[in-house]
Amino acid sequence: MPFFRVMLHGEHVEVPAEDGSEPIVGFYVTFTVRAPHADAAVLQARAALMADWHPEGKWGAVNRADAPHVRAESVRPVGWFTAWRSPVRMGYVFYPAS
Image (cartoon, helix red, strand yellow):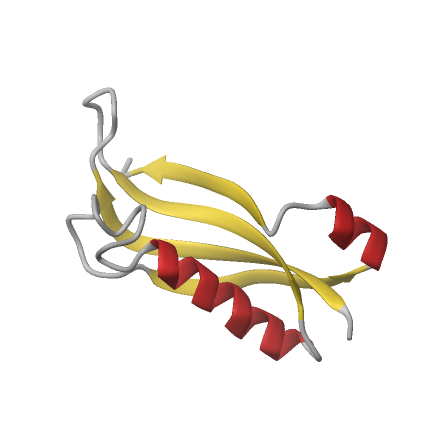
């Protein structure tokens, strides 16, 4: 079964900034998943993301808006060695409104 790297873009959240500046309203995050095809890879990555944004999840607990609106920005196959060396979740990159 192949591996894929899936970049997701989430919007319409509202997370207070730690420094008191504009709240966070969107983010990008990349997942590495093993799936039979690209569509299944997107579904797996999306499920992992939504677990973080569930009301009891890491980000859902501080989000003052609804669950994020998520779309796949890119999906590409990667080799097993790249997948093996990559974390499942490559960290969130957040951005504020402005």
